[in-house]
Image (cartoon, rainbow, N blue to C red):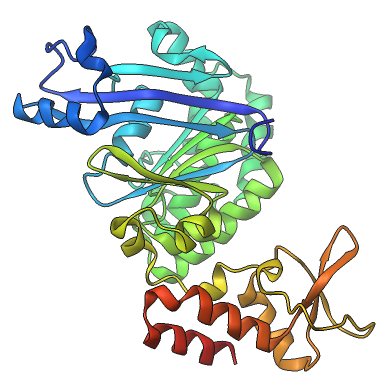
Length: 362
């Protein structure tokens, strides 16, 4: 176990992707031992572009690991290095303990066909194929028999809610439906590791929210190991177990979304999180009223329930809500304790914001 997160599925170790500087001896001498910012400065002075600079992280079995950053921060470059759609300049990428960077082209094709799934913002559907045939295409590349293909395609079509659209062509589908086809096609091969690069960013807000719900439902069922790229912190907050924020190819901060919101490493991270309502971040366990006594007729919620979910209950129950863990009462959440916690957490964001958040909770 690592940090209570379980077995590591994918390890990214000191990954660099340097454009126009591959022939320079950055990693062939003691220059490679220089601090990352210093080495990046040297590379840029040489006319090279460090698109990914000394990036390291782990993805655990069943974990959704989100990578965020502004355009050009290096997040898509990292994912393309992980899948070897582009070749890393330096570092290690370990899948189940084996270095992907040392795999032959034949081995890599086999890994992509059987272990990796990829979904991108551009759905990449084949316009001349029906929904069914688009989903079945990677299965045919695997060499599966017709009966097995039929079974797997039917299962994922049901999983993503496309029943009745099997014979439709991409042009006959909405954006959300096309995205479901892309997800189903990726899931059909039953990947152990799933890369999603801003898969919902082209969708309108309502469909995007629905697709997030669908994604979370699928993940609850399948428990994939997922690397998910987004530029939307509210989306990351909904889906991420852990997340990493990048800038200029480097990792700025990594941790649970709530950790990054409450304790941003710098102003760059704080800017990402400043519009996030604290009611979505704080959990019942964070806002317990130490003086309140639990009553038998109080409503109950798990202690990892968000304050946002508690607000309707607090409006109905003047005595509060019991926070539970494994059937045991951990304490009581009251309207007063919620307002106090919001005011305290938002103090660094400015008095106007803190007052607004507290008023909203009341």
